[in-house]
Length: 365
Image 1 (cartoon, rainbow, N blue to C red):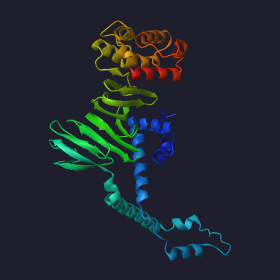
Image 2: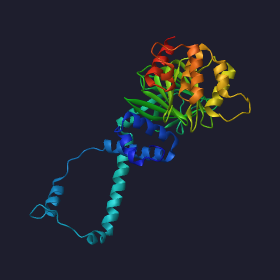
Image 3: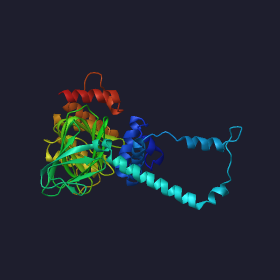
């Protein structure tokens, strides 16, 4: 549905008129599509501008003019088009008036208290971070649409409203995308941030070039390299990584990588063996690369997995087919026997209820 541009949905998305699933998919499309993102920003700006315009009562002379334009039967008097176009001075004047009013409204909107409130506090931790082109010598305000940038010697801390803190490491570029009661969203273009969020799940999000990190009540670090690939490390709670129809829910102590155009890989616990982690990265992102091993990556993953790695194998069940799925099931069941009522046949056909019950049991052990 969203493989192509979706101009017809931009306004509906901006006004929260789409279903949750549609909204999520549109948001993910905006990550990788500059054209649609620019269009969305224009629509959102226009909507905010319109919302800030004051309502004024129409003058009596306007109604008198309308009454004059109506004939005795209440029908409008038709003026031939040619008469309008014979008045270029009127057209130029009207255009100038529209430009003037729009400019004044934009200035008033940016100066209004409501605009000022749509900001997050930024504290300098070291060096001289920048908000736009302005140096943060002590404290600053990050507004919606603004970039916070640190160099090699600078760092900063962002207060995410009243729900948490985000530390910004050196050589990082991050933007405030949205802040409202139902959603707080950053965009991490490059570098590294550390988030500590104490709020209900699904309230804080971070866009990256290769996925969206969705807070499920947690603490984590997220870093993005120059190629747009990212690595998530969770230290408390859970984080969901998403791109299109691909999702990985990462628990504390685990990590997950993402790649542009692919999305999140398979979560893994960071104390897994190096061989296991290398094979998993190859399976997720370079399945045809045989430079470092002629042994299929899945064989290495299954052989080198521990009981704790059953979580990783659970994800592989839906990411392999045929006989490989049967092999993954057998190894997972050996490491973490499924609960009563969860059958081999049901898992092989990817019965969602059975998969969830098995995962829930893994999470409690």
